[in-house]
Image (tube, rainbow, N blue to C red; front, side):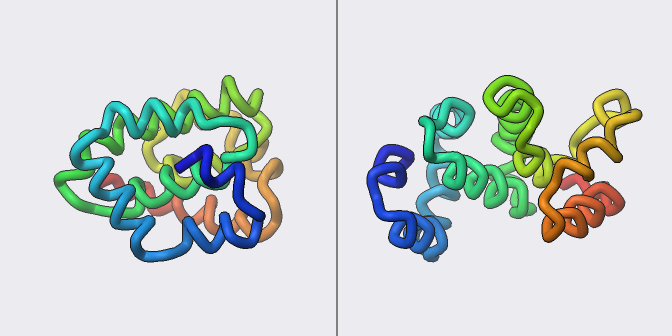
Length: 135
C-alpha cells in the first residue's frame, strides 16, 4: 500500500485512499494482522505520510471491540511517528490520538501542539481533546 502510494501521481494516490475498498482493506488488516499493520504504519516510507495518517485516523475513528487491541498499538505508533520520524513537527499524527494521551504528555504542551497545527485542523484537535472519549 505504502509503496504503491509513493509511486502514483498525487491525484490518483489521494483518490486511492479515499475509496470504500481501501477502508475495508485497512479494517480487515487491523483485525487479522494488527501487529504487521502497526509496524508498517510506524515505519512508513518517505512520501507515504498521507497513507500512514489515513490508517491512524481510520482505526481510531471506529468504536468496534475488534479494533480496540490495535487502537492501543496505533496510539503508541502515532506517538513514535510524531516524536521520532517528524521530530515533533507534524502534529497531525497526534490529532487522532489526543484523547488517549495522558496528562503528563499534554501538560504544558497543549498550546504548543495546537499552534503547530494548520489552521483548518485546530478545531478538530480541540474537539477531540475536549471530548476525551475513549472507546
